[in-house]
Image (spheres, rainbow, N blue to C red):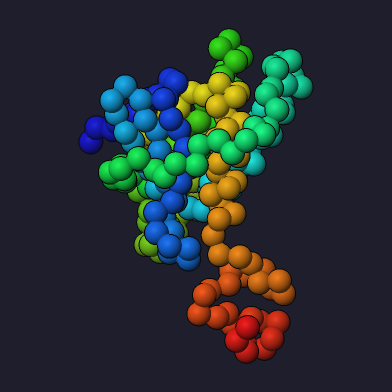
Length: 192
């Protein structure tokens, strides 16, 4: 089976966004450039961790290589919705990050869920614990994006806004509050 590598070096636009109402949102990474539009689905926690790890990567690049980093954008950047149509190319299983010193750019690679990961998620994998792959399979679809530090900083800010735009957390237990109510464990299951 052939795999596709969707490479955008650099993209015209690369953003994290959602489709659906809070509590039922589907998260996407979307890259646009050269007349192409690629959207890949991922989990909210993956978007949050990606923003956090990109921030760490930029700080490390500045410390180790003396890369000049832009300040956090003062004005709200790209707040536009995802480009349509939002057709999911694949679901992300693995995210990879790198810093290319030669071009002073950040490389983000989103790799599709592999058969092993899908079996584990469905509970159907064999119990062979010896067969844990170290590297993602080479024949999985990928989205590869190369960003400048400025574009990376803008991506981080938008990703954080998107993650925080969901349901507010319960002040007692931290679980998301639904508009219809919330069964808080701190109140012994009574609605809040």
